[in-house]
Length: 173
Image 1 (cartoon, one colour):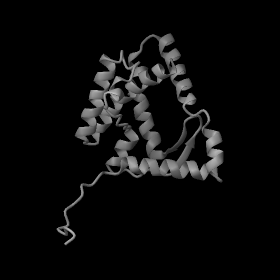
Image 2 (cartoon, rainbow, N blue to C red):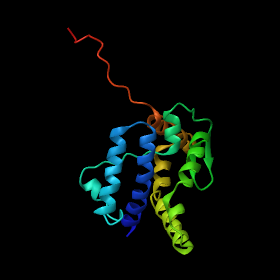
Image 3 (tube, helix red, strand yellow):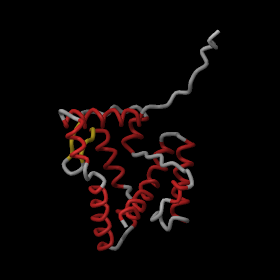
Image 4 (cartoon, rainbow, N blue to C red):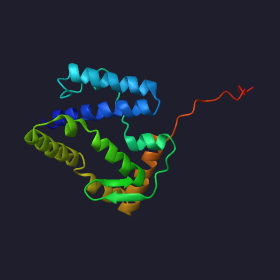
């Protein structure tokens, strides 16, 4: 049941990832994520089952904070948001846009269903962090610095443009 909930909301996130990959001018990632959404929606019963991963279609996560970083916006200061965790000023602004265009929030009109689903989504997200605190205590002397550095490195890697290997003319001869 927990896997189905995670898959369903992951499929909704993949729709927005498709849009953000397109905004980042990444045609292969856009096509792959769009295909992933289509396969999971049709064959995975609205994303309850992750058929795309079984078929070898990889998830290409992208959010609006990443998109802004891809186009050159600096991250700004590191912040820790209550209940939401680590972020930067840019990623917080991006999260606001992501949340504004969240399909669950905008397309589910029954308030009971929307609030129940939102609560289920939060429980699912929290369940993904169970046990992480104990692991963090084992590997980090300073948990704050460890989480900050790991978060900033991961976001930097996600926003960098990949450069093609250039031929320098030296074939090792």
